[in-house]
Image (cartoon, rainbow, N blue to C red; front, side, top):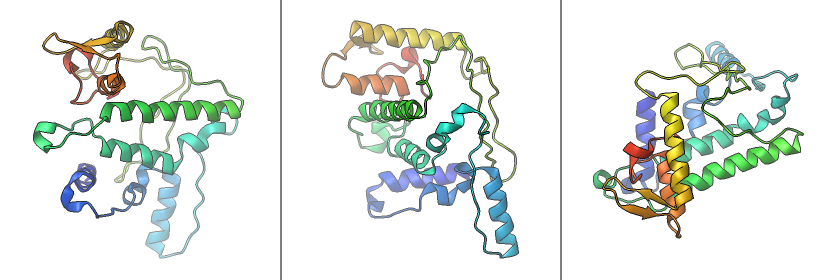
Length: 235
Protein backbone atom coordinates (compact mmCIF):
# COMPACT_ATOMS: atom_id res chain seq x y z
CA UNK A 1 0.00 0.00 0.00
CA UNK A 2 2.83 2.40 0.86
CA UNK A 3 4.51 1.72 -2.48
CA UNK A 4 1.21 2.39 -4.27
CA UNK A 5 0.81 5.78 -2.55
CA UNK A 6 4.42 6.68 -3.41
CA UNK A 7 3.95 5.63 -7.05
CA UNK A 8 0.71 7.58 -7.44
CA UNK A 9 2.18 10.78 -6.01
CA UNK A 10 5.37 10.50 -8.06
CA UNK A 11 3.37 9.85 -11.24
CA UNK A 12 0.96 12.74 -10.68
CA UNK A 13 3.78 15.15 -9.87
CA UNK A 14 5.80 14.32 -12.97
CA UNK A 15 3.27 13.37 -15.65
CA UNK A 16 2.23 16.16 -18.07
CA UNK A 17 -1.21 14.52 -18.16
CA UNK A 18 -1.83 15.40 -14.50
CA UNK A 19 -0.38 18.89 -14.51
CA UNK A 20 -3.45 20.43 -12.84
CA UNK A 21 -4.28 17.54 -10.51
CA UNK A 22 -3.94 18.50 -6.84
CA UNK A 23 -3.49 15.57 -4.48
CA UNK A 24 -4.26 15.79 -0.75
CA UNK A 25 -1.23 16.36 1.47
CA UNK A 26 0.52 13.18 2.52
CA UNK A 27 -0.19 13.76 6.20
CA UNK A 28 -3.88 13.27 5.38
CA UNK A 29 -3.29 10.08 3.40
CA UNK A 30 -0.72 8.53 5.75
CA UNK A 31 -1.19 10.37 9.07
CA UNK A 32 0.48 7.56 11.03
CA UNK A 33 3.80 8.60 9.46
CA UNK A 34 3.54 12.19 10.68
CA UNK A 35 2.21 12.03 14.24
CA UNK A 36 2.63 9.81 17.26
CA UNK A 37 0.76 6.60 17.98
CA UNK A 38 -1.26 8.11 20.84
CA UNK A 39 -2.92 10.53 18.42
CA UNK A 40 -3.63 7.77 15.90
CA UNK A 41 -5.16 5.52 18.55
CA UNK A 42 -7.39 8.33 19.80
CA UNK A 43 -8.46 9.04 16.22
CA UNK A 44 -9.34 5.37 15.68
CA UNK A 45 -11.34 5.40 18.91
CA UNK A 46 -13.25 8.52 17.88
CA UNK A 47 -13.99 7.01 14.46
CA UNK A 48 -15.22 3.68 15.84
CA UNK A 49 -17.47 5.31 18.44
CA UNK A 50 -18.64 8.02 16.02
CA UNK A 51 -17.71 10.60 18.63
CA UNK A 52 -16.45 14.08 17.84
CA UNK A 53 -13.13 14.52 19.57
CA UNK A 54 -10.42 17.14 19.96
CA UNK A 55 -7.10 15.32 20.12
CA UNK A 56 -4.02 17.01 21.53
CA UNK A 57 -0.64 15.94 20.19
CA UNK A 58 2.42 15.96 22.43
CA UNK A 59 6.07 15.84 21.48
CA UNK A 60 7.75 12.46 21.76
CA UNK A 61 10.33 13.11 24.47
CA UNK A 62 10.47 14.26 28.07
CA UNK A 63 10.73 17.90 29.08
CA UNK A 64 13.71 16.94 31.23
CA UNK A 65 15.68 16.30 28.03
CA UNK A 66 17.18 19.57 26.71
CA UNK A 67 16.74 18.32 23.14
CA UNK A 68 12.99 18.70 23.55
CA UNK A 69 13.45 22.46 23.29
CA UNK A 70 13.69 21.99 19.52
CA UNK A 71 11.17 19.17 19.13
CA UNK A 72 8.79 21.69 17.56
CA UNK A 73 11.16 21.80 14.58
CA UNK A 74 12.09 18.15 14.09
CA UNK A 75 8.52 16.93 14.62
CA UNK A 76 6.78 19.67 12.67
CA UNK A 77 4.25 18.09 10.30
CA UNK A 78 4.60 20.82 7.69
CA UNK A 79 8.37 20.63 7.59
CA UNK A 80 8.39 16.84 7.32
CA UNK A 81 5.76 16.97 4.58
CA UNK A 82 7.92 19.45 2.69
CA UNK A 83 10.92 17.14 2.97
CA UNK A 84 9.16 14.04 1.64
CA UNK A 85 7.48 16.08 -1.11
CA UNK A 86 10.86 17.41 -2.22
CA UNK A 87 12.12 13.84 -2.61
CA UNK A 88 9.04 13.09 -4.71
CA UNK A 89 9.74 16.12 -6.89
CA UNK A 90 13.40 15.14 -7.27
CA UNK A 91 13.51 11.32 -6.94
CA UNK A 92 16.95 9.72 -6.69
CA UNK A 93 15.91 6.95 -9.10
CA UNK A 94 14.95 9.30 -11.94
CA UNK A 95 16.47 8.04 -15.20
CA UNK A 96 16.38 10.44 -18.16
CA UNK A 97 16.53 7.61 -20.70
CA UNK A 98 13.34 6.06 -19.28
CA UNK A 99 11.41 9.19 -18.37
CA UNK A 100 12.35 11.27 -21.46
CA UNK A 101 12.89 14.31 -19.27
CA UNK A 102 15.91 15.82 -17.52
CA UNK A 103 15.48 17.41 -14.09
CA UNK A 104 17.58 20.56 -14.21
CA UNK A 105 19.86 21.42 -11.27
CA UNK A 106 18.66 18.39 -9.33
CA UNK A 107 21.93 17.97 -7.42
CA UNK A 108 22.14 21.68 -6.66
CA UNK A 109 18.60 21.62 -5.29
CA UNK A 110 19.44 18.57 -3.16
CA UNK A 111 22.46 20.34 -1.67
CA UNK A 112 20.61 23.63 -1.13
CA UNK A 113 17.50 22.14 0.51
CA UNK A 114 19.43 19.94 2.92
CA UNK A 115 21.87 22.73 3.72
CA UNK A 116 18.93 25.03 4.52
CA UNK A 117 17.41 22.39 6.80
CA UNK A 118 20.62 21.90 8.76
CA UNK A 119 21.48 25.58 9.18
CA UNK A 120 17.88 26.38 10.16
CA UNK A 121 18.02 23.60 12.75
CA UNK A 122 21.29 25.00 14.10
CA UNK A 123 19.70 28.46 14.32
CA UNK A 124 16.76 27.03 16.28
CA UNK A 125 19.17 25.21 18.59
CA UNK A 126 21.20 28.34 19.28
CA UNK A 127 18.05 30.33 20.04
CA UNK A 128 17.15 27.64 22.61
CA UNK A 129 20.60 27.66 24.26
CA UNK A 130 21.73 24.41 22.64
CA UNK A 131 24.96 23.76 20.77
CA UNK A 132 24.90 23.33 16.98
CA UNK A 133 24.68 19.76 15.70
CA UNK A 134 27.99 17.91 15.98
CA UNK A 135 29.70 16.60 12.88
CA UNK A 136 28.83 12.98 12.16
CA UNK A 137 31.69 10.47 12.33
CA UNK A 138 31.13 6.90 11.12
CA UNK A 139 33.55 5.49 13.69
CA UNK A 140 32.09 7.42 16.64
CA UNK A 141 28.85 6.93 18.56
CA UNK A 142 25.67 8.95 18.25
CA UNK A 143 25.09 10.28 21.74
CA UNK A 144 21.48 11.44 21.42
CA UNK A 145 18.87 8.71 21.05
CA UNK A 146 15.41 9.12 19.59
CA UNK A 147 12.10 7.34 20.08
CA UNK A 148 9.65 8.38 17.31
CA UNK A 149 6.54 6.92 19.01
CA UNK A 150 5.04 6.35 15.57
CA UNK A 151 3.41 3.14 14.44
CA UNK A 152 2.78 1.34 11.18
CA UNK A 153 -0.74 1.41 9.80
CA UNK A 154 -1.42 -2.24 10.62
CA UNK A 155 0.34 -2.30 13.98
CA UNK A 156 3.88 -2.38 15.28
CA UNK A 157 5.99 0.56 16.34
CA UNK A 158 8.81 2.25 14.49
CA UNK A 159 12.21 1.23 15.91
CA UNK A 160 13.91 3.55 18.39
CA UNK A 161 17.55 4.58 18.62
CA UNK A 162 19.02 4.40 22.15
CA UNK A 163 21.56 6.88 23.50
CA UNK A 164 25.25 6.32 22.77
CA UNK A 165 24.83 3.90 19.89
CA UNK A 166 27.59 3.03 17.43
CA UNK A 167 27.16 2.54 13.70
CA UNK A 168 27.11 -1.12 12.73
CA UNK A 169 27.39 -3.02 9.47
CA UNK A 170 24.09 -3.89 7.78
CA UNK A 171 24.45 -7.18 5.94
CA UNK A 172 23.97 -6.79 2.22
CA UNK A 173 23.44 -3.03 2.49
CA UNK A 174 26.46 -1.17 3.87
CA UNK A 175 29.54 -1.53 6.03
CA UNK A 176 30.96 1.17 8.28
CA UNK A 177 34.39 0.71 6.74
CA UNK A 178 32.97 1.31 3.27
CA UNK A 179 31.21 4.50 4.39
CA UNK A 180 34.51 5.85 5.71
CA UNK A 181 36.18 5.10 2.37
CA UNK A 182 33.37 6.68 0.33
CA UNK A 183 33.39 9.85 2.42
CA UNK A 184 37.17 10.07 2.03
CA UNK A 185 36.85 9.79 -1.76
CA UNK A 186 34.29 12.59 -1.90
CA UNK A 187 36.38 14.82 0.36
CA UNK A 188 39.42 14.21 -1.86
CA UNK A 189 37.39 15.12 -4.95
CA UNK A 190 36.27 18.37 -3.33
CA UNK A 191 39.85 19.21 -2.32
CA UNK A 192 41.18 18.52 -5.83
CA UNK A 193 38.28 20.26 -7.55
CA UNK A 194 37.12 17.39 -9.73
CA UNK A 195 35.37 14.03 -9.76
CA UNK A 196 36.40 11.04 -11.82
CA UNK A 197 33.78 9.69 -14.23
CA UNK A 198 33.09 6.02 -14.85
CA UNK A 199 35.18 6.22 -18.01
CA UNK A 200 38.10 7.82 -16.17
CA UNK A 201 37.32 11.33 -17.39
CA UNK A 202 37.99 14.37 -15.22
CA UNK A 203 34.81 16.26 -14.27
CA UNK A 204 35.63 19.69 -12.86
CA UNK A 205 33.53 21.17 -10.09
CA UNK A 206 35.29 24.54 -10.16
CA UNK A 207 32.53 26.20 -12.18
CA UNK A 208 28.87 27.15 -11.92
CA UNK A 209 27.77 23.52 -12.36
CA UNK A 210 30.07 22.11 -9.67
CA UNK A 211 27.52 22.26 -6.86
CA UNK A 212 25.04 20.39 -9.06
CA UNK A 213 27.51 17.54 -9.59
CA UNK A 214 28.47 17.48 -5.91
CA UNK A 215 24.82 17.15 -4.86
CA UNK A 216 24.26 14.31 -7.32
CA UNK A 217 27.27 12.45 -5.90
CA UNK A 218 26.38 12.91 -2.23
CA UNK A 219 22.73 11.90 -2.64
CA UNK A 220 23.58 9.71 -4.76
CA UNK A 221 21.12 9.78 -7.64
CA UNK A 222 21.25 8.22 -11.08
CA UNK A 223 22.83 11.52 -12.14
CA UNK A 224 26.01 10.73 -10.21
CA UNK A 225 28.97 10.57 -12.64
CA UNK A 226 30.42 7.52 -10.89
CA UNK A 227 28.05 5.90 -8.35
CA UNK A 228 30.11 2.71 -8.14
CA UNK A 229 33.18 4.61 -6.93
CA UNK A 230 31.62 7.40 -4.86
CA UNK A 231 28.77 5.33 -3.44
CA UNK A 232 25.63 6.69 -1.82
CA UNK A 233 26.23 8.65 1.38
CA UNK A 234 22.71 10.02 1.69
CA UNK A 235 20.61 7.09 0.53
